[in-house]
Length: 338
Image (cartoon, rainbow, N blue to C red; front, side, top):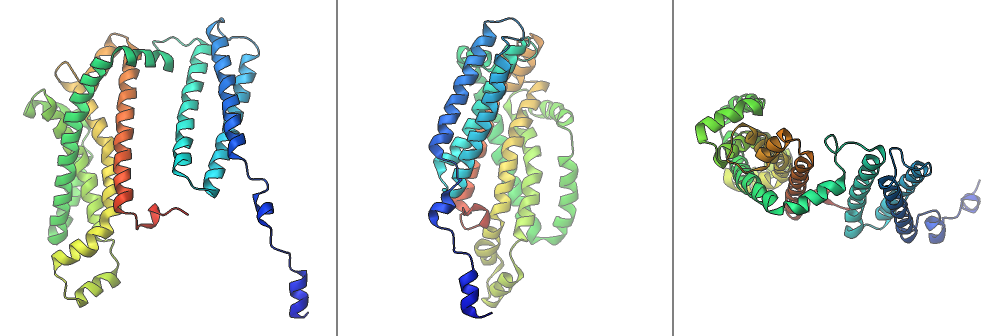
């Protein structure tokens, strides 16, 4: 067969219109999202004014609305893949969170679950609005003092020790097993000791956070400093670069993805450690203190309010670290958008 015959039988490339065919429309997906939300609002209202189980039509409408919302979010995700947008990337998790709360509200209202077992999101929201001064005081005590102080101190010490271990090889072999041992210590065993050493106020909680955040930073930094390629290291030696020059211009930049990975892990560990540490002795303020106290009073909606504030604070903290990572490691393949 000749070259001309081969080209004649080859299929013609698809046109732009054909490639676009079948791709979901962003406008249609958002419209269906609105229809689904209206359906769920109607179901929740029907559940609220009916006995347990609700009207017969409510559950099929709830199922249909959920499937419609699933399809619309999937369509929005498909549109975002073809036309990347920061606004759409933010819209997807926001819609997911809204639907999680809506389904939670519908199930609690429809099944008439007692508030002492699982309060509805609306009841938690009312509790948050009515106790803003208390929640703010708890947030300042736990997050602004214990978490931030312990986080920055623990990450800084872990980073400095990693640089020292990289410079002195026998420290690397000795510190990593010890650090692994320390990281395996249970919080419930360490927290009372820290309270005895540093008192009932926030320094004892910050000390627990230091212990929890030290080892992830140490391990990730040591691994990151070894991430630079052999060819690049040989090139630095060819240029007669000193250890400090090689560290600052080659090895630390290569280690930045590992370091930010540790910072993101520690952003959640620090909040968990501070809250748990407050169970073992604290002034009459703090997220952990409030949770343990309100559980004893069976005020579960206040417990969920504290959990919601902690989750929001942790998410924002993680997001700030992620934004800093994108600004610093923009050159890394993981930060490139297709």
